Amino acid sequence: MTILKAVIFNGALANKNQQTTFQKILEEELTNVGMETESFILNQIEIKTCIGCFKCWDTTPGICSGVKGDRGEEIKKKVINSDLLVFLTPLTFGGYSSELKKILERLLGTLQPGVFRKKGESHHLKRYEKYPSILAIATTEKRDEKEAKLFKHLIERHSHNFHPPKHEAEVFLINEEKNQFRSNIKQLLAKMEMSL
Amino acid sequence: MSKALILNGSPRGKKSSSASLAEYMKILFEAEGIESEIILILTQLNKGERIKEMVQKIKSADFVVLFAPLYDDCQPSIVIKTMEIIAEEKMNLSNKTFIPIINCGLPEPEQISEGVTPIYNQFAITVGFKWGGSLAIGGGEGIQGRFGKQLDEIGAFAKNAIEALNDIVQSLVSEIQYPNVEIILVPKIFYKWPLVNLMTSINTKSWKKMAEKKGEKVDAQPYLEE
Ligand SMILES: Cc1cc2nc3c(=O)[nH]c(=O)nc-3n(C[C@H](O)[C@H](O)[C@H](O)COP(=O)(O)O)c2cc1C
Image (cartoon, rainbow over all chains, first blue to last red; front, side):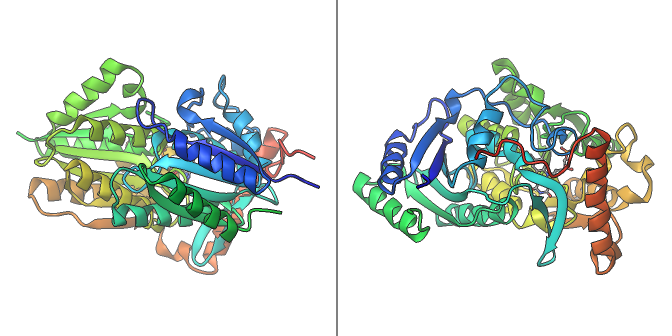
């Protein structure tokens, strides 16, 4: 039997709420559905930002050779071989935190430079047959419907370009009651049919 | 006299489409007697004191114009970081106008205006900047290849961008609200069938050739397990 793998990206900012409680619950619920889970608290890991050189497209296809001396490639390898990628990010003007984004942009090489057209828009070709599904969880101190909508829309667009078989996005208050968060996560995982 | 701060948010720094656009904007500002300065977010974020310096410059500007590429349907990490810093500072920004000028690799400016423009707008609202409109430039990658030349020296390709930058500066000078504008750099006909299919295929083939020149396969699949 193959074991499904999940990777959690915790994009909390240093010196801010570390989203530890939510990360733990996510880990537990993923284990509950039989997934092998690995978490990365991004602000504690050496990951440099993308320099936009496109070497992962035209020089060493699929491999970042423009940025050196960090854990970006090791983490990318885990993503490629996973079934579910979880974003856990403080909601930042309706988008991702800088910590989450620094690893996301290092994943560019998982796509090919060539493009295809769909519904009047261009998108990059897949490099791999299979990509992980995406479960995007944003946390916020104050509920703001407009920001929540922006976040869901961003995940929608990002998913057109990153080919996850399934994607879900949800926003939670950072002080959300634990059991409430847990039951919501259970529901989301069930909706994504994330167990074997 | 008004002061403009031009933030270059490209991770490519000085060799970027954002840089070419920013430099031209500076010329336009100065022609209007507006003092302007370009700073590179990339180097500014390196050190604590440089971050303070950037915050200080924002405080003393009347117009804050941000040039940045579209990365994964949103802002590059270094730009988000800058936005987080600005929010953290809790400055009074109500008399400062903020304009994001975003360029992307794919040809459609909607890639920008559909996704990231509303995020920049939400940022402006949250931190208290006056929203000065926005510009989305589809296919902006083409500008970078001509680096070393001023925007008005690269020919017809930059025409729409030059016009838009002019309009923005004029709007700021005459205090007229600039709208949210989308532009493309190549004639519209290239966006329609059959030319669009031809362009797409030429583009895809040229990447393949570039990789082949380096002895590589553009569709390689490194890192796969099993
Ligand atoms: C990590 C990364 C992600 C990108 N994501 C997008 C994207 O989602 N859509 C797009 O049209 N272009 C995308 N691009 C292309 C850039 O927007 C394009 O190259 C742009 O012209 C760069 O501008 P600059 O030279 O000012 O940095 C991406 C490039 C990189 C390196």
